[in-house]
Length: 381
Image 1 (cartoon, rainbow, N blue to C red):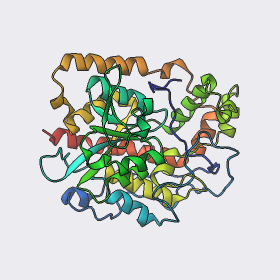
Image 2: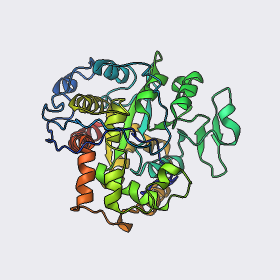
Image 3: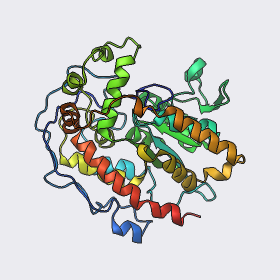
Image 4: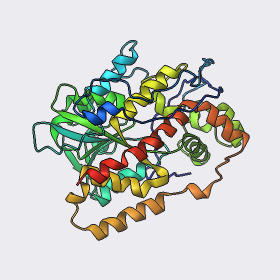
């Protein structure tokens, strides 16, 4: 399943993870706390009203996966030692502006830089293509270091043969993010959007500068995402032995053996390996509920319209008809979801749901947040 990822490139996964097969209760409530609505300037890190409940799933099985799915850094940039829940939340607090603040486009001293949280198998490549070719934005992702530009000492905009423009940094690797920080990406004003799977590490590029990140993302149901990963592995030809291990497996075998689980919670809570617990889910929900504008793969067109209105992308485009045609083309051509079975209702689907229980709870929370955030777009004129 190409899953609308135009670059067909998987981001690092949350591997070396425990196998959680316990069920858990869902959580509900407002995605952001009422006080944030009353006083948007207050970003004191207080908990929102709907953090995870005590009876959320417990990862008691701390089994280490046999092998990672894809290479990733063994030591996150900002996590050089154990970090408390509050330490992790403070990293986001100081670097990302809250979603219920209007976008600061740079008229004053402070400015927001849109940061797209790129989640694997969730149409992230399509969103990047729409931003590059339909809105003609300059992206800081992983595309600007080809042709030797990974050796550049000064930050610059690179124009490809297709006309797409990228910053000469690699935001798909922690080491690349550290290089981007050293080159002054956060304060450069060159990138219209930063795109990265490493939201936690990317916080570092906004440390001690006037600019802040503004998170937005496109989410897919975690089980659908896992099944998309299965279909992708069946046709993947990179020769990566970790991926080749899954090739030719049945969906039931894949569901039993796949190492990746709870990718979103792990990357938000900066806990890539080991057992998760409800505290990690609580951290992920609080960070996500305060900092990220939500889009949904099931409502991709509407989600892109929301991004456009919130960030003012429409004000930068002078060819509205061409833009709409361009967006529709990428959304329609990129959507491969109907080409493969969903396996919903099968034992494999249930196994994957249990393995990704924390991500499922976060996704359900995000669906409520998506509805809540509608008022931001109605009020933004």
